[in-house]
Image 1: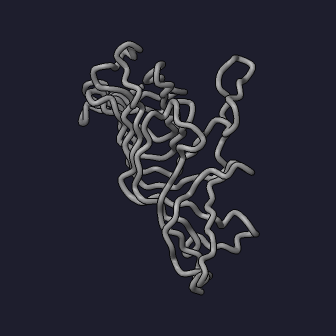
Image 2: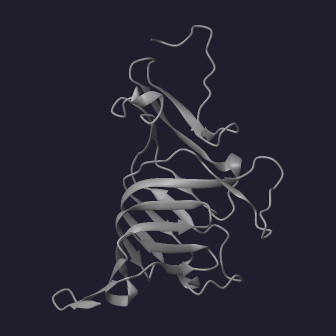
Length: 219
């Protein structure tokens, strides 16, 4: 642990994780086990944020704002989501709802995570709004396909560009709530078109189904 006398910030090493809200299942995990603490319990770190058992955010230049009880996610590398089964609720050995990881990473650039109402930092269940945690992106996000077919689909021109979006009630969204409208670019195979990514039942990946029109697609 060291104190920067110029910035008056405390640098703490060896931090495995910091729980932010037990009620909202939210914690931060510094990738280099280092956290910089400033005034009023604000923190800066690089690493991962786990939210509501359903969302993982990894990146750098993250800033925890204690007063507003939120995290400014300056540079997001990727988002990873989990969803319950589309069938009847499946329970694990502990009786909790079993969640399945979506086999597609969403690559983003920046966003904001609102952990709980600023007046409910203690996590009082009686005062916790069901809307929280809330995550929103500030710019376009992307899904790439260069990991399949031996990399034949190059990320610079074969991708799905997701519009800015907001996810509320992260602790409880279900399989069918995961929808990401945006634009699909197929390296000129088809003309670009707008559609919505959804979770595929077959393999828990994000995909889309596009029915051919009478006139077909423009090639």
